[in-house]
Image (cartoon, rainbow, N blue to C red):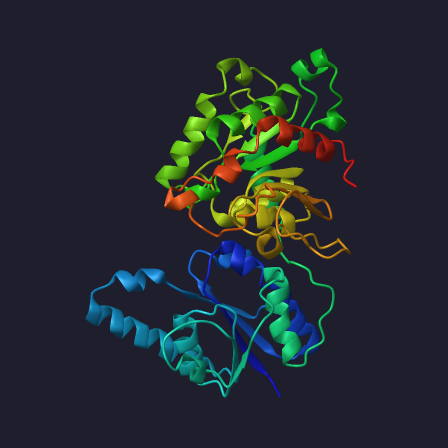
Length: 393
């Protein structure tokens, strides 16, 4: 019987987070088993402090940039280190060629994979290979693999842990002058009760520009939020293109909106943490925010895993594959091909055009998705009003 598992997911942050129900299911079915995760370096933070994972192994993709001989040596060393651990079972949820090779050279007698394209003979690197229902949400596709090997599947739930120390550090970033929020003078002037003031986490950027909304549209929503007494926490990666996008968004917000609406160090109600956070810090900041608004990217999945209401803008991607998950929801997730959809407390805003989802990098490879740009700020604000009031049906 299975005793020592290696679960392989060599993808991006959101993809890795969506595998967390797999680890819980394995431990619940086989409580005495040893479970390791193999993920790309830079994605492991979403698995840290997970009680269902005994070891996290990272693969450094920078190896691929090394000179041929050095790369060969490092690849062999990596495979030998994997084999030394003595896994008896590998579960490859990646579907890529590299993961298949690692699975084979791990020395595991049972090597489970999913049917996917690749080099000739790839399927022979596995001992068991399954065809998965590609119309399901990615989280459910991951669990289907376990179901096919005879394991009992409980309630599908994402798992993301945040320590109190991490929350304290995040609180100091959001409230640098005060340990606890208070009713500021401008709110009293406008008669906004402190209980109605929310902290909105906005992540408007992605390494894939075709997932991004118009900068001026994002600025319009931010202006509306802060003018109604809410605090906005802006995040992005440290990538130069993403930081320029944040700069562009803020350029559309007049300086008058930086007057003391909130409690940040500069007296504004916009806290710009773009490019300043590690992944663990971003997770902690997301845990302290009340709502996530932004595009289809990893922080969206992080907020959803933390149980925060999510309002997400979707363009070429399918929500039925990648929509924000709600652990508490009882209905089927994102049953429509496209359009505005709700799953629990989460809302995906998407056009219902026949070409969606196309999965392309913008219309005609332009890096600009017309379906996203067709969504207007007023439409988004009306939906945010519903979420902010707590009247999601």
